[in-house]
Image (cartoon, rainbow, N blue to C red):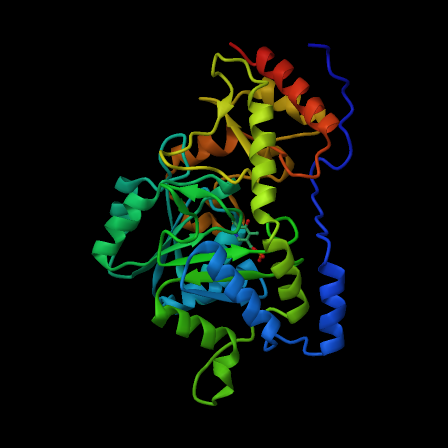
Length: 371
Ligand SMILES: *Cc1c(COP(=O)(O)O)cnc(C)c1O
């Protein structure tokens, strides 16, 4: 292989889809004039979502953060209650717990994985526990179905923060449909983008009713407390159009990921993050890993302009952020995972030349990463 040039091609970290039909549909909506979250366009989009994910109910909201807050509210997160979540959580996963007035309880993940460590989980469950959050970070499946079964027995709801996991499969099922509540973001950087936005999925009619009512000011009945978290109609129209392209996007991302994985040496020193049986990542990013942090590989990626999340975004275990330091518990697996995972772009906006460029760098750097 020829030695790759060191300058990164443009557009590695951004993907801005504009499906045909979107501007026309937006123009039609502007003509219609009903732009609020009460528009039939929002109900149509919610129906699209239930069909795509194969669930009974979807509630469109104005952000992934709102989706999480609404889900937490629906399961009774209030001051004095505890919400368990993994140490791999970014602040965006955990801030809604604080907003709801609950206390975050941080648990470790399994070694080299994103799934909740069942022993650690059982250690922290109390009669104050109102919910457990499962997090398919980077669109990688958690394998948390076993945790879901254990929690179902204890009567504790499992909330999935599937903000990055549109189309991810876990034990054959779509992420966000495994626990009682699935929360998604449609922020600009997510696979389904409406600029800002989010939605909650559930099969439970009672939880659906509570979320629907609460996010819509209690339908202004004057008796029920609520917030206004509605998604505006133009964003729902964008969501409707882009959802139709999601399956194609997933196929492209998965093919791009395979192209990059094929560039790695077969020795397995640098390899893809483990995927539980029946799982399939959506390749929000391609995540590579090593048994221990590999500074040479990390530095090589960084100087090539494709730095791992821990370097590019300061990604680290939740309790290493000042806002969550007081909830610190020993989570050795999450600490190793944060430092020894490497995230690479796979989005459909990558040109063949950009993919070749990343693959060439990867091959070169993974060779040099060997002990
Ligand atoms: C993006 C994201 C959120 C927050 O979603 P917003 O739409 O930005 O509010 C929450 N959790 C995770 C894991 C995310 O990636």
